[in-house]
Image (cartoon, rainbow, N blue to C red; front, side, top):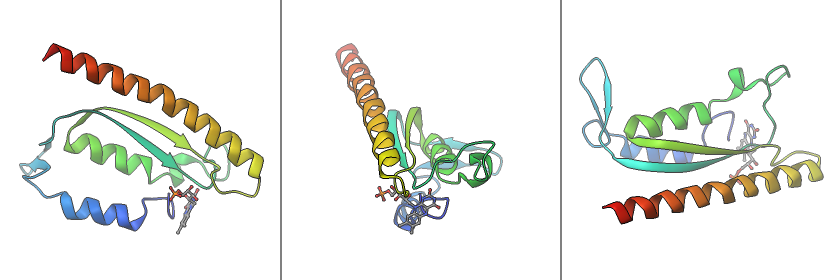
Length: 125
Ligand SMILES: Cc1cc2nc3c(=O)[nH]c(=O)nc-3n(C[C@H](O)[C@H](O)[C@H](O)COP(=O)(O)O)c2cc1C
């Protein structure tokens, strides 16, 4: 997360590749995907922890996951799983390490899911 949104290099990449009739269709009324991506995993890192009921609720401050999730689904990612690693860069080093360890553990489980269902799909085809 940079300034509550995406780092500009990632946003620039999206702006370069996201052309109508290449990654998505738009008929003036609705959008349609042109990619067929069975699944994807996104890891979102943030310096802080955004929680509802605190001065930095995600409903107001998260323009990172909200944007990228929508964009990936728009272009054709069907099953999207996400891992949020928050507190990645704060004053409490221990808090950061706990958050990173939790993120790694969650990602490890998701990688299992990603590889297992990929293999099953490959065997079916
Ligand atoms: C330019 C810049 C802007 C940032 N803006 C935010 C922010 O708005 N909110 C936040 O929680 N963290 C912010 N961070 C912290 C990063 O999200 C955090 O360090 C994250 O771990 C960076 O991930 P990376 O090392 O994979 O780039 C910012 C960091 C940088 C360098």
